[in-house]
Image 1 (cartoon, chains in turn red, yellow):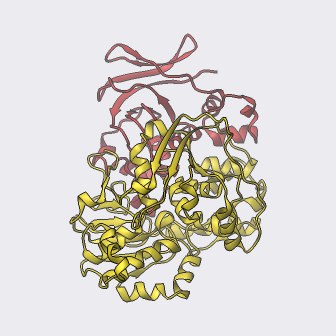
Image 2 (cartoon, one colour):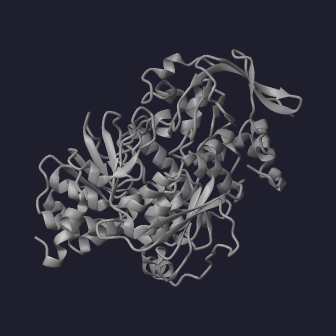
Image 3 (tube, one colour):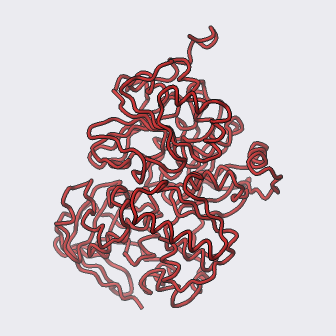
Length: 177
Length: 392
């Protein structure tokens, strides 16, 4: 069941990266198609950021990542850019939910020691979810994901989950996220 | 958007369609054909299912939810927008969610939620003249670390709450989102039911909920309203979060645009209080563009009926279509490069109003009105001080 396996390059961001930084509201006037909007990813934070993104990159942020709007495009534009995981000290809850619902893996951990460009490996070891900084040769602990969250991520997001089940059979779990 | 997710999930019929409300507020009016096509998708979807749809010009969804009785005390209300937390003022547990969550609710009537911990805000005393709910909200944001507040509910309590109008409570609940909270909730009192009765013309059943007497709180924060002074949120710098300061320490900063509107500062009492300042000063500063975007058609209509709309027009304000307006750069005017905006809105992220090269400051409607008069950040209390002498 535990199929998470991601390797990628760390792209380090500071605290309080808000949804307007991730994708500017003015770009959403014309389209909300993430394949178009991905060229503007984080442009108001760092001009030209999207040109530097490689497929498989991992965003490594500080506190309160994704604060602001609940608009889902702030997640889908990250996925469209080839980024499949975000590590942060903490997430805005609406961003955290939107990430899970769209199959973007949001992991809470102490990102303090990660440097720009470090190679990270995320996967299961002995049944526990682990983040390994291969460049620095150290593990970064992260709490395991709640069963409901795992069920949605394993399905590939909430759309796939509901297509499959038509309802929320996993809501029986008492400790949902 | 949620309708696309709904179709992709295999949804056909809505679970309880009468409980699902649509509002076209962010792009009102739209400025390009692609947006019109998106809005037509909503029109077709709702026409086929008989949902309530608030058209362009009706106002901001959050205001319409309150005005039209879609929020019941004690209810669980979810909105596909971060400021859905506003309904906490009416004793609902209200949270902002994304489009796929909303599609799931539309399809199944269910959502996965974890019961959040609560932070108790003990408000005591009464606000001094020239200080408003916006100043309380900014003070709370300054107190609380978003990292700590994340996925917690702000519970507004204490004897200071009774003195706050429902419109003021909506400002506090609304800005729970800026504090990083999941929701912000008030107990229901006589004012809650008076408000609902006044807005809907009906008596509303008391389905309210209140805190357990032995409730445990993650934290308690006491705020003496009588000691507050006007606050100012500075534009974020170098990616850092906005900083909240005492407005009186930042007086004199030139202002180019003043924005009176949004689901935070675009209600009737906001305009009444702004005009009370404007009347004291008389003339708008020639450099300032004053933009008035009422939160709803009902607010706009009320301004017209009481003559306040004409006062704003005579003062030189630009009156915009009720809705989200220029708050998030989705429609309406855009501030120019290097321009300074003072806004009654809730959020001042870089680029928020459509131009990353403009600086957005946030303050109360009264402080916004004072800046419209002087062309600079000005303590609104300067225009209120000689009231006992009859003003000037």
